[in-house]
Image 1 (cartoon, rainbow, N blue to C red):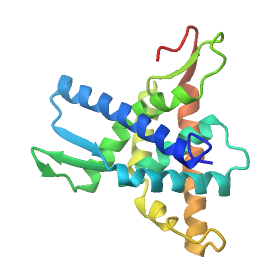
Image 2 (image 1 turned 90 degrees about the vertical axis):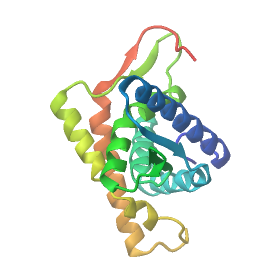
Image 3 (image 1 turned 180 degrees about the vertical axis):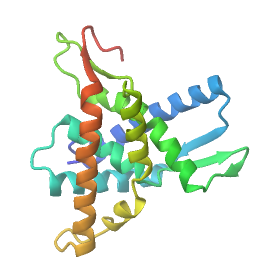
Image 4 (image 1 turned 180 degrees about the horizontal axis):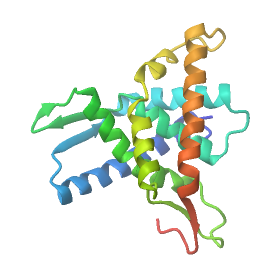
Length: 198
């Protein structure tokens, strides 16, 4: 089981697509806003990213549903080193700036990931345009900016038959974060009528 797909191979493909679609949205935002932060995907890390999410879902969620999976995507990506960032040709290493970028692009990640979890097309399709309430949105972004990459590095690589106390603790922390993200996202994921435009 991966984060978005059942097999590791399919999950890496799905995650790569979601991330690339989200980065395209970021590039469009940069053109319209004058933002100069350039972001590229470190594709060699997507497999590790998929594996980390897989471990969390298997260990902490008995039967994860689609919102659990999308929330896991949000948490793991906000703890990851999946991206190369630069401004005016110079690498961006400031951790706060990196975290701010990840929190800003989260809406695109959620909307793209929803493509994989749609109801019967006669019922409509799911959309997420961001958290509508300003105060809750601010708290959500503040929460994302405080997620710690050390939790992800702690659970990979590891011996699947013998988890350390640190790894068990990291799994619990990440699963708690996933549940928090589920609670933030759920009220603003809407089922709307009409066919999903691919």
